[in-house]
Amino acid sequence: MPFDIAAVRAQFPALAIKDNGQRRIYFDNPAGTQVPASVANAMSACLFEANANQGGYFASSIAADKIVESAREAMADLLNAPSGSEIIFGQNMTTITLHLSRSIGQMFEAGDEIILSRMDHDANVWPWVLMARDMGLEVKWLPFSPQTFEFDLDELDNLLTERTRLVCVGGASNLTGTINDVNSICAKARAAGALTFIDGVQSVPHVLTDVQAIGCDFLVCSPYKFFGPHQGVLWGRREVLEKLEPYKVRPAPSELPDCFETGTQSHEGFAGIKAAVGYFEWIGTSMAGAVGGREALRAAMELLFDYEKTLATHLIDGLTAIDGVTVQGISAADAMDRRVPTVSFTHATAVPARVAESLAQQNIFVWSGHNYALEVAKTLGIYESGGAVRVGPVHYNSTEEIDELLAALPQVLSA
Ligand SMILES: Cc1ncc(COP(=O)(O)O)c(C=O)c1O
Image 1 (spheres, rainbow, N blue to C red):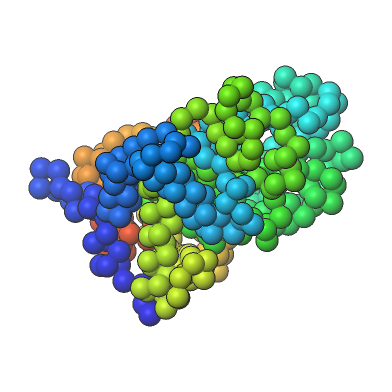
Image 2 (cartoon, rainbow, N blue to C red):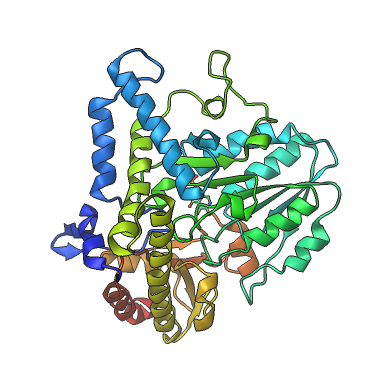
């Protein structure tokens, strides 16, 4: 069954919005995606029908309990986690990581080592630098090549020692779009006796994720990047979570996973997360012939990945044909499997922020700058010059929208 973009677009009310009669083109998706009506409806139903704290004897509280439980199961399906009880919710990835790093740090001793990557968003960098500072740990850096935009995993071998306790790396870069070989990275870290913390914020929206196959100890992601609400989600391996001391207040539950969730949670957010996973399942059943469950999620992610590859190829071909443009990421046509469709570019003379501003005047939404990927921008040598323009299509975007961007760019870049 083919990918039905018209059916997809019909799910997203935001795609039909016009401003002063002008259509919107959303290429700001790596920062946050639009939501299907099913997500907003689930959230509003939760607020209308299940608006209570958890653990009560009355109907609305029981309904809230069910929503939380089913959202954990849905995320366990999406990440192929062994159990929903290993799924921890929070406000966003950054908050979860800062919070958990406090507990993780307690496992280490002064002189221990951690490995961070130069390809990561600062949310998978600075919480660990702060943890290292507080615990007296040594930080080692895994570089990436500004020519290939990939890691050389031999360099990881050189960094790992018997003192390495933790390796933190992203599933995909929010700036270059590179998909990292997290399975190999985790295997190497595991062989050295180190834990692994994977930032899946930019990979989970595009790539079928399987925490058991990856072999990591933690994986975090942000549902608002995959058609859900503003929330963060962490999966942690049970044996490791059980060893951590949760930073919590005394009356809060001591059991997993609640012990890592601080204060009252956004139940409406959880309802939205479940619906976002349900949206992928709908794609898998209605467009890829799957029956349901994890199989439908697999079928959906594969279908979407293939479609997004065509968008990325079209976009990169068009960008590289424009004078003065440099794509800051993998560009070879036969390497599209190694990147998500997030494409950042620089121009010989145009300032990224001015390009984003000019495109906004045509209602084409893109981001510019370093996008919090400080180490990436520094490695690429674009930090001082305003970073890059980031164009981030997802499966609800069309090739026609990319054509509109490409048609607008020559004039925007020469202004
Ligand atoms: C790769 C990556 N990691 C982490 C984050 C931070 O996510 P959150 O906003 O959920 O804290 C982002 C946000 O853009 C990101 O792109």
